Amino acid sequence: MVELTRGSLSGVTPEALLAGANLAAIGGGSQDNWEIFQFQSADLVAPGRYDLSGRLRCQLGSDALIPAQWPVGSYFVLLDGTPEQIELAASGRNTPQYFQIGPAARPYSDCSYRKLSAAFAGNGLRPYAPVHLAQKWDGADLEFS
Image (cartoon, rainbow, N blue to C red; front, side, top):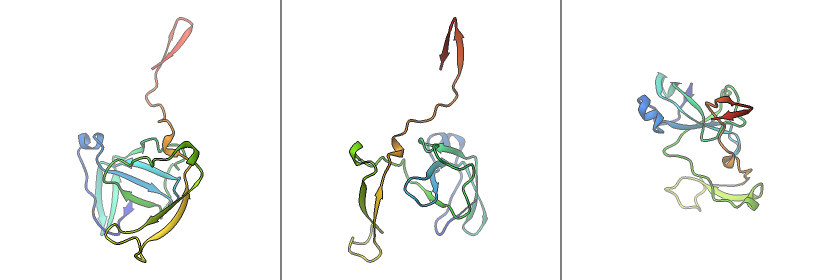
């Protein structure tokens, strides 16, 4: 169940889902603890409140530290494209980076902008978890595919 402050959600076909539609992020607000997932159906149950089903969880390698169920009050963000990795040299990991965050339609000097510092651990560089792993014996060797 998610609640939106504005906008709306809609469902997609299974084919569109598998092609990357309805990509979203959910997390607690820190820079390190976000899950990327997709959903096929979004049923409006109250004004601004949707029940999401047909979920594909742990997308794009976001499976390392996620809870079995996100707590009430977690942040939900509908993504309009695939998230991109921040360009950061290996030496820049865990080093504070400085950002200004605010509405794109306003200048950086506007009071609505926030300044923040964040140190990234490089979570997006983790390899994807193996799925549908199969094994078979070939003589004395064990083959994985």
